[in-house]
Amino acid sequence: MSLRIVVTVKYVPDATGDRHFADDLTVDRDDVDGLLSELDEYAVEQALQIAGEADDAEVTVLTVGPEDAKDALRKALSMGADKAIHVEDDGLHGTDVIGTSLVLAKAIEKAGYDLVISGMASTDGTAGVVPALLAERLGVPQVTLLSEVSVEDAVVRGRRDGDAASEQLEASLPAVVSVTDQSGEARYPSFKGIMAAKKKPVESWDLEDLEIEADEVGLGGSWTKVDSATERPARTAGTIVKDEGEGGKQLAEFLAGQKFI
Amino acid sequence: MAEVLVYVDHVDGAVRKPTLELLTLARRIGEPVAVALGSGAENTAAVLAEHGAVKVLTHDAAEYADYLVVPKVDALQAAYEAVSPAAVLVPSSAEGKEIAARLAVRVGSGIITDAVDLEAGDGGPVATQSAFAASFTTKSRVSRGTPVITVKPNSAAVEAAPAAGAVEALTVSFSEKATGTKVTARTPREATGRPELTEAAIVVSGGRGVNGAENFSVIENLADSLGAAVGASRAAVDAGWYPHSNQVGQTGKSVSPQLYIASGISGAIQHRAGMQTSKTIVAINKDAEAPIFDLVDYGVVGDLFEVVPQLTDEIKTRKG
Image 1 (spheres, rainbow over the protein chains, first blue to last red):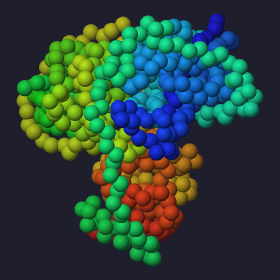
Image 2 (image 1 turned 120 degrees about the vertical axis):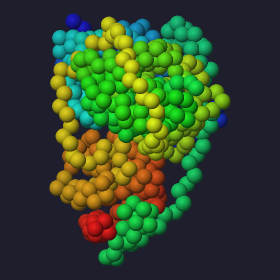
Image 3 (image 1 turned 180 degrees about the vertical axis):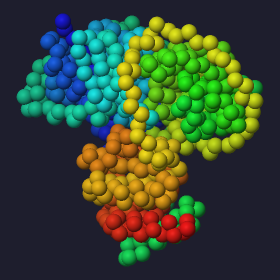
Image 4 (image 1 turned 90 degrees about the vertical axis):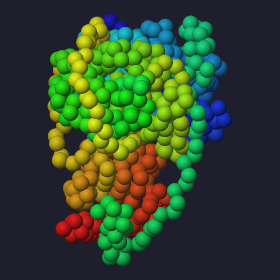
């Protein structure tokens, strides 16, 4: 039996760059280099491992984003995914999490799937709600925030480490899984993988292909509105002392002055 | 006055502090109606009433412990339909965000996650969020449906405001999907006796400079002298010196305490993303060029194994 795995990935501005907002208060993507969200690499890795254990499996990576987002797909393909789907449409600019989950859910349904794997959150928006939203929209179990995951006989099992407890979870496929950065180191693409990725198919879909109306997505279709974005004022320079034997005591004095002691 | 649903995070009836903060914020935009689910739900009523809950809707069923997230979404939706609130507030825990998101899409509402402040506005509640490793502050609102907002711990000071807190049984019928993800085993996290990282007023963190799991006792001793939680940088966690559950940063937890003390942490962007909103920042590092010093209110350039024990002793002496 074949196992169809769809991995959702996001192309995000590099966190080490100088990230800021554009005039319309969406994320400025022009001034900072983009890349595959680091937390999604773990999702690709787990998809490849699960596919490796299955008799017959296919890993499709899916992204929603502008032209450049193809870079994120190429990275995932060079890691070993089989094919890619790029949902690209000018109407998508400024879509919020609810809208993004709609587009992803429609694309996942159109692609066909047994298992969806996502990272725990994107490294730009960091909301961490898209996997749960996908499960809600697709009407399938959510098995999220896993630090360990396995699939056997159409059942997904995993461990979720919460604040209060560690839980073992189990659900029948189809299901939506999200994995944490504890799920296992993501592989580096090999030279062979990078060359092979160039020949792998990347399909492009737009809103019409997914039967989504323009007013359901984009800035206009967002169910939330950002009114302002203000750069945090630079911190005023703090006091820095060199320890010459009394550094701990000096620090205690500072903390006492601030009423922490 | 409009009612505001507040989802209660509790462990066997013991309400966690972020929920009390939510009640404080909820009072700015309406009358808080609390929703407490699962074992011990009714025992939450007294403390919720003390902090402003006019009503406490409770429901207990085995489903809340036996299946993941969806039973709680079904119940919150039942409360939503019973009350028709002006807003729904949920603590920004991993689970809280999932519950809130699923509710939002079900009831056709926008969602704002990880708010750090909340105020009443002309067009509904206005939420403050921090973005891009706290280098930006945004103000947003929900423009469609009933605002569903998750709020981070330490976003408000807890204020007592006695209210009726009348307990009412909530009627819940679980959806077919409620039993989709089974919890087949649960191991409670071992209690350290220290406050929970994201909720703590003071966090003391160690990084690469701690140089070994056995040396983390230096960090723990300082934390205990201050009644603080212990955090760790990704480098320390990846090296296996401290558990991942204590990791502060982009791929760990984001904390916003009154006081953050970083020891032996250089302050890479990934770490800064998780602690930059702390009110007062202190760092101890051998390297005077470490980027963490750009953020500090007070920094000590020195060997943490000299400075931290001296600090700990001095705190103990002062506290007598």
